[in-house]
Length: 101
Image (cartoon, rainbow, N blue to C red; front, side, top):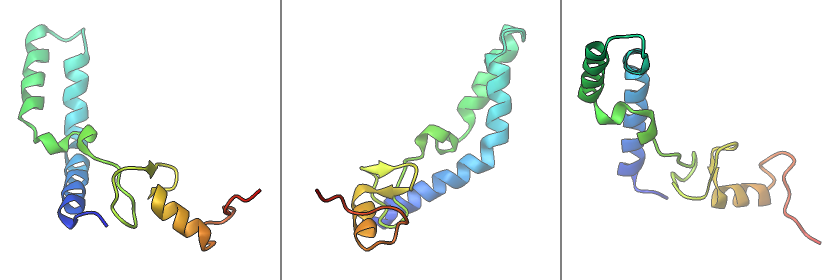
């Protein structure tokens, strides 16, 4: 089990990303548009820099839904490799069985 502080920090980041998504997208579109004057693009970059760091989508770390483990994460199932293996051994994931040959 991961530290609860790490899990809570990641949840806080997810909330901030959702809160600032529209504002950040609008500023990014202005800053990247070459048709807009250089001063306006620079001003948009400054406003982007003033937004909270944790409101950026790249700061979110993928974590297992069950254990909160950050490494060995399968995006499709939102589980870590350890949780995936234990659930598949108990038959809790449909269509997944332990390999034997």
